[in-house]
Amino acid sequence: MAKFKFWMLSILVVGLAFNFTSCSDDDPINEAQVLAEYMESADSPLMKDYVNTDMPSIITATDVNSFNLLGQAYIIDIRSAADYANGHIANAVNVAFADLLTHVAAINMANYQKVVIVCYSGQTAAYGASILRLMGYDKVFSMKFGMCSWNEATATGWSTSISNLYATQFTADSTSKNAEGALPTLETGKTTGQEILEARVATLLTEGFDPAKITNATVFGNLTNYYIINYWPLASYLDPGHIPGAIQYEPKLTIKLDAALKTLPTDKTIVVYCYTGQTSAFLTAYLRLLGYDAKSLLYGANGMIYDVMLAAGMTTFKPATDIMGYDLVQ
Image (cartoon, rainbow, N blue to C red):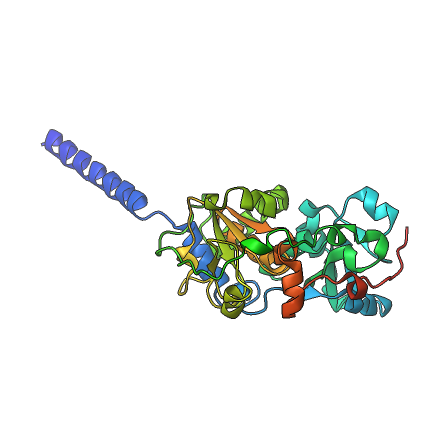
């Protein structure tokens, strides 16, 4: 009788262990799904779907100067310490990209109307501002065109990057989106949207902007290597056209779960481009947050079809009017 009881107890223990293991293996947490749902919901740090509402959050040098003169701007300069020392905006503090979140978390936001991130061209700052916005810091902006818009002495980046090099290669031929597939695989080990967000943000800040950017020369070197997102309105996708093979994703409508998010590939590098490389940097931060291998095309269409954009009245960097000539301090 004792042996029978022991045998039955053994079966029960094994059965419970099997059921527990089966449930764990069959129902793993889809971290990217949890994170995407969280970021699109009213429970997200900004209490809305930032990517499809307010993004991008960009402020002009003129407005930065005005807020700064009134003492209402907190300015973070993420350029190298040497370039910061050589000349920066008055009151700006020099902060390493990796330290952005901890630095901003220590600011008394009630004292400022704007927290402005400044870099060389506006693109790295846009990437950083996107990460901080996604974490709920709704006063954070990137400065349009970066220090290139502040003073002639710091304008080299943009002044030497506008180009018509690929104007003859742009096309009006449309390319369809991928069929809907799976989201990327994330393995933070976290279970809630907020926990996964915090873990992913820590990774992005540690990585910096370097793995999230790409040049037009690299892209055009082998167009088939990439899934290229044309992130501007359909009318502009057709005229003046787009990079051959690029797929149009309508801003503020398509990058979400119930639209076209799942058409993005998880097995191919995604290249996002816009007019200036600033909006694409904002979007790239979000895509990398979700686990996509996404990269922002530096200087956007300004670096490929500049004169065409000027003629069409699209957003361009104009040295004569966009370099403001504001003072630099050391």
